Image (cartoon, rainbow, N blue to C red):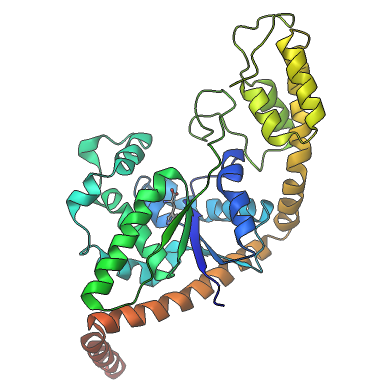
Length: 350
Ligand code: TRP
């Protein structure tokens, strides 16, 4: 049986947090045993909302951080291919070709484009062409690798649908080159942030990073929001929807301790401080193996680079194979090869 291929990944905008871990990283680490898994570090996608020099200067560092977060979460570099999007020349080419297979109308109707603009503080009139084309570039990622499965969050399902449409459209026009990729939606609900207000996100300042050390973790846990009506330890509190207990449920595997804490909390027999201290201990225990794996790689920075090079090298081979077929199917290969050969000859002669 041929193993199916998975493609998914992240923009290199910063380090990953516990929300990413439960929402996607743990899932990827599981899937890598059954699928040919490829992780993209989508720096070209990052440019659609962060095109400044300072953002670009961060790419190398952020890419290394992402690789560390992946490895810390249990991604095995022997099984999973990790690559840097901008280092694959073919992605620019396929993106350009795909731009003719999607209508502007189709893209403008996607809520995700406006959502991303909003997060980036771009008003609707100022949405760049590249941001509108975000799903086309993402389709090029998916189809360049000829991935069959794309694990994504809710907000990205519509982009995988665009990739399916492009694959179908391309195959109809030029012949079967691409499989129709399917989204793999994780059923884990988004993890709430430490402020209990919305989902965990770095920009909201309510995130616990996988790379946070013990001191940072203590500080973040002790400043978490709890039941706002509970101004004294002897007031009965609410457990449901309380972020401290949501985290206890998610990360404390001492179930008995969690149940005892809950009933004491409901009865007004325990202070927030103790609930948080126990959460800190549990979270710290949970994160220690992640930190350990990260430390292992952090101590050998050249190994992290090598993992990224190796992955990018493998993706280059896949990309050149796909593009050969794309150009042949479209009939672009003849003229292109002829002109390229002539150009080479001309250069040598000069
Ligand atoms: N759009 C993804 C995000 O929200 C990143 C991404 C880029 C991606 N290319 C992809 C995800 C291909 C899955 C498949 O950050």
